Image (cartoon, rainbow, N blue to C red):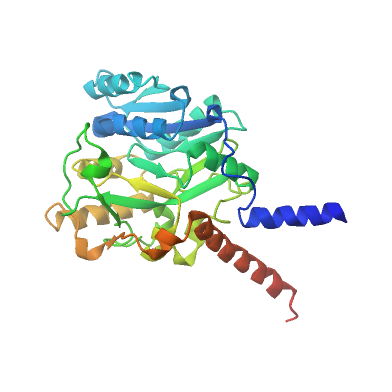
Length: 342
């Protein structure tokens, strides 16, 4: 009886992310970053990207970066490699071949299988994606382990200029200064789309190395064994289309894609072999919007984040528990309905 009571207590604590102390830390040796960077379009982001994840506590030796170029002697390849090496990071692989999304995500899965032990954590991020965690990363992942969480997803927070223009990137100035406005652009200016829906606005941030990311990095190849931080994939919450709900979530991916290279990047992805129907729909709609407004984002159509009382006075753990509470309420209501006589 005592063991049963203890198991129930543990389940309740895990359900509300209540186990462990914030002082506990995961060994940094168990945290790995995996990415693929297209150097001909993203070389100006390389230094910013490396500095951000080094700053989160990931050791340089645990960066597993694939550098992609269409030409073996591309100047951008040399520049990107140099920027990584000056930070103690050795590129995992040089991939010289025209980019396709399918091939790129297969590369990332192959690198994960090859480089990351099964009981370690993967931080999955594109070159323009900068994660924000509510605690120092080693502490946060230790909390996840103690509470039985194996997969952390978060919402995109679009970083834009105050006037909506798409300027060139500056390698030396912090991106947060170049793009100070936090907003919800995706899902507002062109909608989520029939094929993409809100799923494309959610990104896997951190997950146990026994799990593998699917194409796009928005979900898993097989989520059967995954235990999500928010109880289930964030895209499954009906409220995920609402800016107020998204802005209150404590796991965020700052998306620095709204710069002068955006149109070239969209053109490349849309012309690549094997582009997904969702990616094609979203890319074409986005290009049409920006071209129709003089190469800028229309602020009248986006939602801008403004820090409010809920974020200021309600802690991240309380906000997390509120969302997990929605999950368990829905889950238990289904069980009750199944047991009721028809």
